Image 1: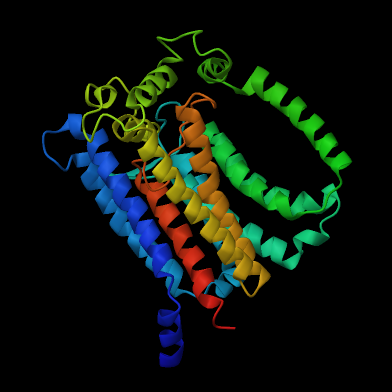
Image 2: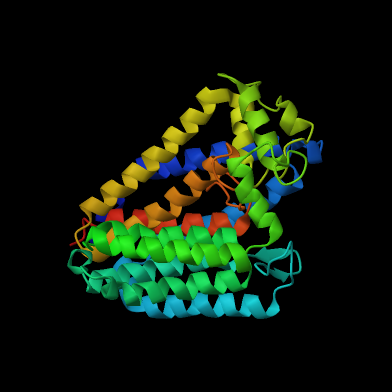
Length: 369
């Protein structure tokens, strides 16, 4: 056992951990600026809550690293069932907040189970594709079982009326489609079906404010003081930052509170206003480095399950980051997607840290075969 621990310590991905710590540190500094107007204290109540969530995230990260990820293949059905049960409890007990039932409230503690459910779904999908090699999936009917796995999680989130998280979770699940060998003509049929489903969703499922947000992407000037207000103020903040930004805690859109939900959905706008294009590009480069590192870990894994698990974690980081950035620059509807490790949100931070722990786990165990 001591020999194994020495080997793990010897091959510990310190650069990966350093990159994660750097992103967390930059995120906290940015969050301090975004929440500075709410309190004269340097550390606002929002930042203190984020630090508490970070402590829980560190526990999740450590636990995810400590347990050999290969055991997760056996435990995957139980983890997946537990996350579905948690989503069901949320649907039954959670109060309606801003039109959805996404949060379990225990006194001062608020938990968003849909963020954690994404981790359970990724582990379960990695298990299925490990036992049914992705390269051997050649027909649409072969995707029925993984489709049901994703549908279980996404469907319960839709019932909670949290369409943004549901779309994001579906995108993470679709990451695994990059590895199947289904003919293009079959995907044409899927595309036609998807268009029909989207038409039905548009007519019968979307609320008026959700339709307005989608239309605002096509025509940003159609309702600048109502549905388009958030996106317009975000673009003003990003544009006013210029090349080098206005300086830390000097952003007028941020400090004068013109930028809505600046500590959650539009945290990237705060960064771009205060640090400019250079600062925003630097942070995006750090994200890209983390994603590429994750793909190298997937490629270097000694077993297929580890590779697929790493790919799922990369998808959990890639899709929220891309959607959030597109959202704040006005190229995607405002659907409430946080920027990983930057946006305020304890559940998102806990899920992201746990997923990153799994990524490091796969990296370490490739030396143990």
